[in-house]
Every structure is written in C-alpha cells, then in structure tokens.
Length: 145
Image (cartoon, rainbow, N blue to C red):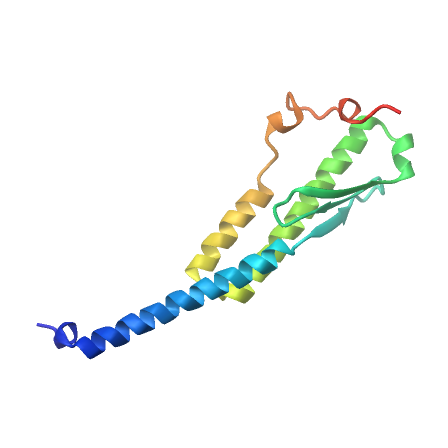
C-alpha cells in the first residue's frame, strides 16, 4: 500500500499545493479578464470610406465615415464597413490571444482553450439574419435627412 496515502502531513502538503495552484489560476483569470475588457481595435478600409472601432467582444463601438461615401454606391460603402469590421474583430482576436498568453502562460491548457473560444467568437462570420434577409441594405439602416 502507498505510504503517502496514509501520511496526513503529505496529504496536507498536496492539498496546500493544489490550493496554491487553484488560487494562482483564479488570480491569473481575474487579471486576464480585466485586461481583456480593455482591448479595443480600430481598422480603416483601404478605400478610405470608413473606420470602425470594436470592443473586446467584437461589438461596434465607433464608426467614422468619410466624405468619399457620397461618391460611392451604397452597396460598396456597406461592403467596406463590413470588411473593416471583420478586420477590426481580427485585430481584437490577436490582441486577446496576446493578453491570454501573457497572463495565463503560453503553455496553459486553460489559456489555450480560452483563446480558442475567443478566436472562434471574434472570427465567426456574421449571421445572415443579423442584417435581415442575409443582404445588408445600407439605405434601410440609415436615417434619412
């Protein structure tokens, strides 16, 4: 029979070490969460039509359109906005991976699992119903002047 199983002092040491690892994981996770909440990214489309800013969840928090939109077909403006949104979300995914690796460690299984879920969420294609019937019609989503 294994003598360590019957040794109360060894059992207490194993429990203390286990608790220490759990406490460290909890602290690392809290630090990671705080840093992830601060992540934002801004991207501009190559044609100079739009600039978007997204937060750590990939939600649009800023949109700036240039005067070039007046000379561009609405569908092209919509496509530029959506492509730029995807680019900004990709930047947030990369920044999030860096934060996770820095706080959880590059070899952390928990960190890799979290990074994978964040990446899947941020890089997932937009659901067709998010903009109605699958096609984004900018004119129906813009307030008329």
